[in-house]
Length: 427
Image (cartoon, rainbow, N blue to C red; front, side, top):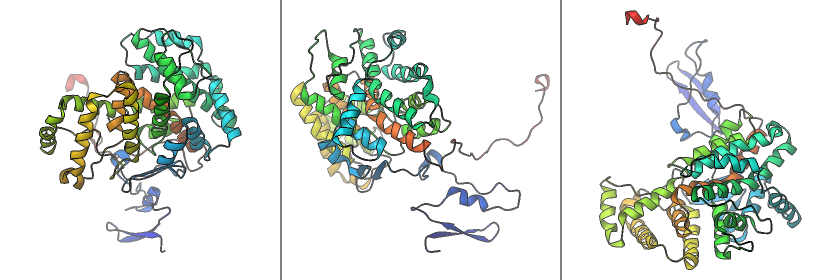
């Protein structure tokens, strides 16, 4: 077989031909390799799934060596420049860019589902004033399922679609309510005459102005940020969405699990760590000394490098340009000069070039959020709004994939052998 892998089991001397399909071999193929008939068979050990494909997907494509990210075949650069978040959401979920008629209908549906039940306000009000807004968002997303009991009928395409609309429409509202609660401000209801990002910004920042309209530069900036965060293949939170969704709960429950995965500092909280680093550096003059400490492994260079990319993260290039546009409206962030100079030095230093450490999406996004006066704890919430469309597209694809079953990885047991129980009086 031309497209196959020949494997010889040296324990038995048996040779096996494993078909290679789409550049991969089936892990189940190894189960046939046994030392005796009642042997379970050989397993594949891969902590953190570093080289395991858990699904076939048509949603996002990444070539980390070349710095490529595409959604349904469309380069992220083109989508960020020419599209809108709601159009990208349709692309991710449906597989194709919508016609004007389809897009108008979709936007109308989103706008008519932005409100949440008044009991959700009371639910959010139950949190302490200093609660982390991400924990509030995760909890309120899960709580939404109690208002839509039919959402558990995940095998119904019509029911699934209705929940997709509700989640994309309502998560910005829940996020804005969480923000207002932490700031001690009255909640601002959605305005259906505004665009998706403008409506969110209005709910966050409007202070008693019925005609409040966000700055168009900031409105567009958030549209682009939502696009850049919309999906990123099988990352931690997308995997959480699929794993929890594989047991077929309603999508609110599964999406709250995905948001919980995003909550962690190694995922959705990474841009916070960049800001802490820049603040610790303090000034451009301190960068050379900081670089020395990084090389000595006394400091970490946050916002550089990526589990997938071995080249410049294409999203980082876009955000870098976006940052300068935002600062023309908000005023310059004093940390920007440090970030730009740090990036310049790192990209010219053989130590970082040899290790293929390039800026990632988190390096500049935190600077934008800080310039717009968002508290650091709110950054993962902003990430979650954009990622909602990606999580839902992953969820739908998983549910309709006939190869998928309830997630249940194996383990290598390395604990004690059989032991007899000893009464406590004899221990």
